[in-house]
Image 1 (tube, chains in turn cyan, purple):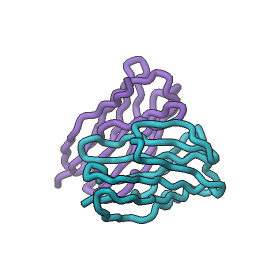
Image 2 (image 1 turned 90 degrees about the vertical axis):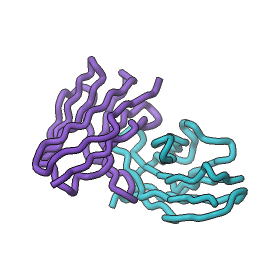
Image 3 (image 1 turned 60 degrees about the horizontal axis):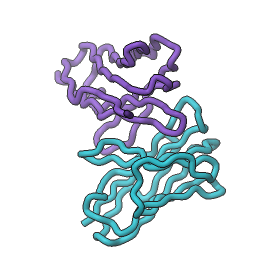
Length: 112
Length: 109
């Protein structure tokens, strides 16, 4: 158990819908990262937050947004969902630029 | 660019050593990591190496780093069937980890 909790584990939804994925980082970790893992794109960095502030953006679509709350949990919002958004979405946390980033078990999103 | 490259597949016999290779691009990376992903599971941090080190050993795992060639390898001694998984190397840049494509390790009896 990495200490990073993601909910839900699985999500099935229809095209055009909006979903929210949740992540609770390890106790004491201030940084949260979101990654998307799909078969054809591998592990793609989406966005990073540190202590509530956005630090870096990767290949995140405009339809996607995220935030980190004062209690340090983070949410990734995906809207106007398309079939191609089906993927595993991972959250990771670390002590800012610390040595280790620990990953949650992921949320498997299926868009039908 | 930000490409971290790995070979896609490796097949080894149980009890043999496995060597998984990775090349990275950012010479300023401070840490390099190896993660393991089993089917249907998340990424498990296996080990890491600081960029000023050449080698790190952790039980059955040995990490070798050639900074000049930007080449990283993971050696698994006495490979077991439970080691079958996808192995990702990753380099740390200031704000994110950049992952390789992953190497699928298959261990056969």
